[in-house]
Length: 202
Image (cartoon, rainbow, N blue to C red; front, side, top):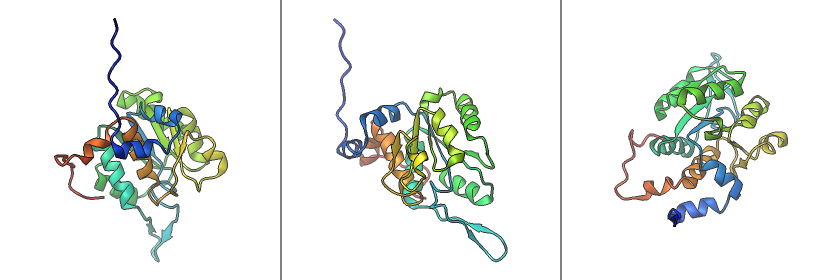
C-alpha cells in the first residue's frame, strides 16, 4: 500500500497570506526557484527625480527590501532586470546582497531565459514581476507572472497574481511573502531561533 505524504498545515501567517491568493496562483508560486523583479514601477513607484546636475534619484521601500532578503535567505534566488541603467540600482542590489542584476535590458524574455539556464531552472520554476509593455513578453514566458494594481490593464490581465499594494509601496514584499508562504518557507522566520543573514539592512 502506497502511503500519501504527510501534509504539514501552514503557519498562521502563511495561511493568512494564502487565503488572499487563488489556488492556481499559489500552485504556481510553490514551484518558484528564481524570482526576478523589474525595478521602476515595481521596487519604486515609477517616479524619477532629477537633481540639478542631471543625477537620477529613486525611492525604494524598506518592506520590499526585507522581502527580497527573506527570499534569498529562504533559498530562492532573486534577480533584478531593468530597462534603465544607472548606479542606484547596483547600489541597492549590493545593499541587499543581490548579485543577479541585469540593467539596460530591452529583451527581458530572452534575459529571463538565459538567467534560468545559468541558474539551472526551467522556466516553470521562474517568476517575474513587471508593470509595463517591456515586461509583458517575460511575464508570458515564466511559470509565475506577477504585477501591481497601478499597471495598465493589459499588463495586469496577463499576470497570474496582482499585489494589493502599488509598486514601490510594498507590492514586491507581498509577492515575496506569497512565494515563501506557498512553499512553507515563511514560517522559519517566525522562529525565535531564526537567524537573518547579512544584518538588518532593509
